[in-house]
Image 1: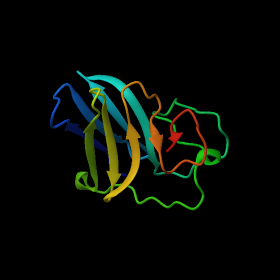
Image 2 (image 1 turned 90 degrees about the vertical axis):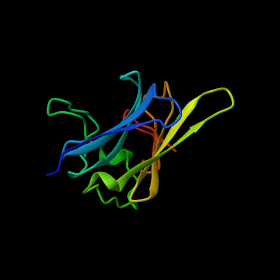
Image 3 (image 1 turned 180 degrees about the horizontal axis):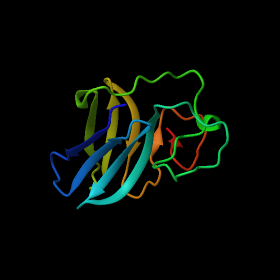
Image 4 (image 1 turned 135 degrees about the vertical axis):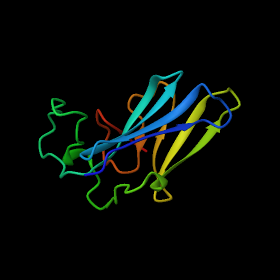
Amino acid sequence: MPQFSINIPCPFDKAYALKIEDDGRVAYAYLTFYDDVVSDVWLYNRLPAPTVSFLNTDDGPALNPAEYLKSDTAVTPMSTEADITCEWDESKEGDIEVAVLLHGKFIAELLPGAMPGSSVLVAKDGPLALVY
């Protein structure tokens, strides 16, 4: 299975970057500020979602359990780095936010301090993603 680690710098504030990691089992996005993670969010599972909600991280980043996922949403995992893009925004107060797009479709949002961030792929708030 493919493994990706992509780093996308913020175009207007070089202190921020978006890091996408897909280890062949599961994918996450991390918003970093000077390389420190300030927000994270689960993006998708490549493997079947566990049926129990216990998050076992012994094998690496946790898969999001089935009870948190929307049942009617199918996701095609990225196959190249070009499949992931992001849109950066800054509020009048100077707050940074970044939208994550997979195959051109919005799937998640990260804001500094949001641990976890929000996803359109989850049915209820959980430890890996909040409902968007």
